[in-house]
Length: 468
Ligand code: FES
Ligand SMILES: [Fe+2]
Image 1 (cartoon, rainbow, N blue to C red):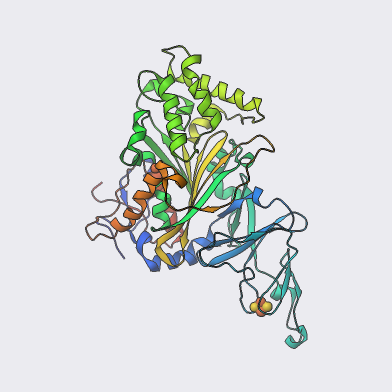
Image 2 (image 1 turned 45 degrees about the vertical axis):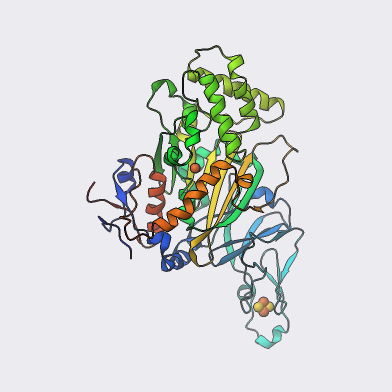
């Protein structure tokens, strides 16, 4: 095992993190094939896995596959309209019921009434019951409904997402989401719909990929052009399994409940101008996500609608009120998020193990990453934008496999991608002394490893550094 210098075997506590103690962790979680194999046994079948947006399976008979590591799950809506999930395997001799070839995002369809195994024709209804076996008499009474049905998987929904858990003894999803779920519930994500969704296979471990999006500490070094209009000083905080990042500020005049997230004041002498430039630049260069047309347009009017010298907090208040009115006029009603929840909600949530959700009152920019095959050096990377649309005006979207080109992803995500591959390579260096994450700004990264270790029998647990 590749232990960094100063390694101590104890997993750090939430309290250690709150106290911003200096920690490190081994690189084997990113690099080791054997660790990736262990994840197949200890991690993926034990966690709540986000499958898809509920709006993708609206009707009885709608179904899709969800694959993670070696597992494949069929998720469907049965005849009564209830969501159900089953392992995608025939109990006879183990053929996949639905073929999921390598390199396919998922397989899905509608109006399904049963699943017929392609090998010997055993058949299952949408509740997983076996409804047909050729020559059952040959088994001489051994066959029962219990040993011929599909293996069922726990399923639940949160915020318009379908989740599954393969562990029959898992905690309920609501408990799993905890305070993070409660906070995000205020943003009514369930009423948002896809604006776009893209995926690709990337040459790095799934953790390297998700970690590239967990913290704004990298903005100054990676997205230098964004510094023209805003500061990206950040803080981060663990919430048990999950964690949040926020924009921080050293300047009192910029302190307001909105300042932690994307709808915040720009820097400089005239915040009316810089607030607009900040949101416009972000929107246009992050593939038209992390904001909305309404917010950008309302920000563009600030210079006409607000007197020069207005304090940043009042500029933001005006901006929010006018964008809210513009949206209401077109039938997009904002949720009422109490200011203290808005402040606590921050910028983006790392949801254990493999998601990051940057949220706003009417939008989400999110990432989800899964391992690719048996290779710790590759992953399936997904990014998508949600938005709250007027009813009936939701765009039709589907998952698009998108090559790494600026026209597909926007210039900011291309800059993030440029790090991922070379972090994966860099960590293999014999000269790397082990990660030294920022204890104030990169807690989401540390917290991922702290929680991973809890599932991975303590392996690669972050530890306090001797030199701290
Ligand atoms: S493996 Fe499915 S019917 Fe034989
Ligand atoms: Fe980035």
